Length: 356
Image 1: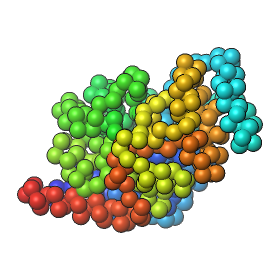
Image 2: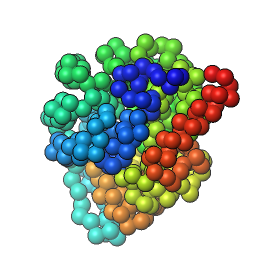
Image 3: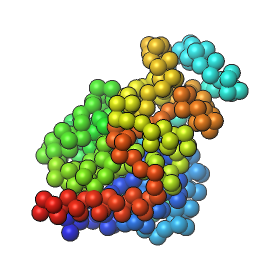
Image 4: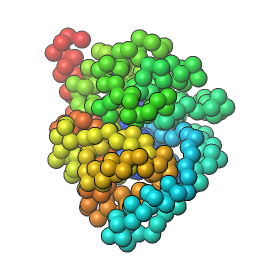
């Protein structure tokens, strides 16, 4: 079948469809449901502790015996001054006062936690581990691959893809500018590497020898088949799964996506310190006004996450992040089974239509 590719072979799945590691929005039910449908569910472990990941993996394994993945964030270097933290906290104080929140301090973000997360992946024999924001070290890559783990990296440019390939990565996600959530860029500012999926995928496929997985703006079977024709061996979906009934996204997040249009999103770094695409709202507009005071990721993220989490819980879309790709009109309020069934049916219709 046309959909049997290097991605299905390397991941041990039936369809080359990957649910993105949406940190903070994945649930064991979502991951298991995707994997049960013959695709690859992914635990978004970017913000998890090793103990949380251990528990999450055990719950997914209780729900499915099919392959699944874990997505981790590669640690990055950062620098900041206490005076800058204090200034940002002063600006955010009205939000905290309104939400009855205390003033936070920057987190530790030690490399040892990342190493331990990899230990958990290996201990539980998770078959696939994907990384965002950079390249795992040679030691980390070797440990995973020698234990039978397929390693996936993410890139926003051909140069980033070539760096991943040189490091020994097994497969590469080509993240187009249409994608929702954080930009995967690691060689340049994510606000600058905004190459669209249609332009990025064929250029990346032509310049690396490992399988390329298309991501960004893919919401239905047409997008899947188009990616396949462009040279991708698989697709990764984010926003499409965010609005599924098994998603861990807050109701206000899901509803905002379902009621938005393609021009409602912006790419901004003011919420977390790292470029991300989401629906424009009041807190983004406010922080863009003091953009010169925004701290680097993950420190800015530390200072705003309580506000965003509490606002989302309270149903206040104006004060939280609403990560979303540009294909919002194609989003569906449905369950995972129905979503993947439709993806398969829609793609096959296009294959038959064009005699591919």
